[in-house]
Length: 154
Image (tube, rainbow, N blue to C red; front, top):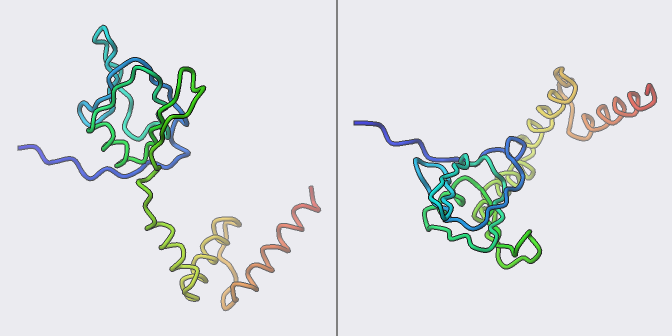
C-alpha cells in the first residue's frame, strides 16, 4: 500500500511563475497537479505551486478540487475578462491566514527573540557573527555605519 502524500505547503514567490492566463478550458486536478482540459480533450498540466496567480479568462470552468488545491498551495485565482481587461472576482492569497503575521509580531514584541532575529539578520547580511553583548540599537548603529562606509567606497 502506498503512503499518502505529505501535506502541501506554499512555495516561495521567488520560485514561481508570477501570472498564467488560462482560457476556454476545464481547470481540474489530476495526480495532485492542476490540469487544464480544452474542448478537444488536450490536457495541459500546470505544476502545483508553480504559479503565483492563475488569471481565469472567459470560458474557464473551475472544479472544487482546483479551488481547494489553489488554496492549499497559495495560488491566487482571479476571474478576469478577455485579455485581462476586466476584473470580476478574486480569491484571497494564502486563504487570508494570519499565522505568519502573528509569529512576526510575537518575535518583535519579545525582546530576547527580537535580539536573536536581529543577530541572525546581521550574520546573513555581512557573513560574520555580530559582536557579542550588543543591544538591538547598538547592532543597528554598527550596521548603519557599515552600510554608509560601503556607500562612500562606491
